[in-house]
Image 1 (cartoon, helix red, strand yellow):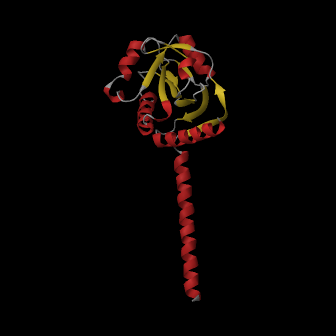
Image 2: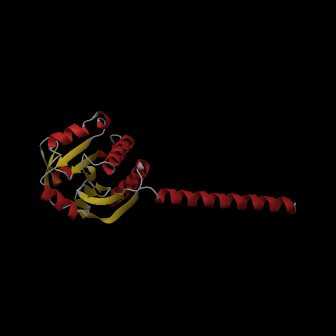
Image 3: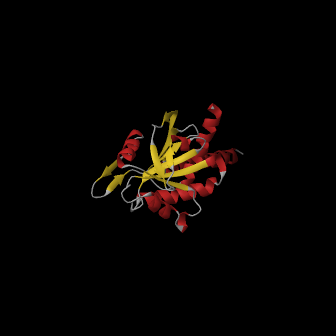
Length: 203
């Protein structure tokens, strides 16, 4: 009887160790994906006036009543932007038509990314089912907005920029940042739903 009891205790102990190991492995895996910074207090987006790919004014008013995923890039970007657009496609597919979301791509290369060029780029077949709004404007306005939102941009032989995805709440305030380590749409969607829950609870 004592041997049987000891065997049962041993089995339970092994199971607990395996469970803890799996939890730790999961935590490590998540840490390698998108790193989300959720602001305790949403940050005001400065006033701006740009132009969308249809030639219409795009201002703070267009951020109202939507959850907006926004990032800065340019159509000739060789790596970060294609990866981010691919991520946005998958996030859009997983969210579907829920939560009144929109995706905004602000070009930091207005010389080449005219509204027409942005429209043609974002209406390619591969982006056809993803509602991405292309936005551009005067270079000084773009840089000012990026700087005020804490987005790094540097013009040299090539345009250097970060891979930060900004989340704007329906009040037009920045509520979270997704820092790009690996393109893991599932992590973004999970974090986004947690942010939605937090927002609804504090509304």
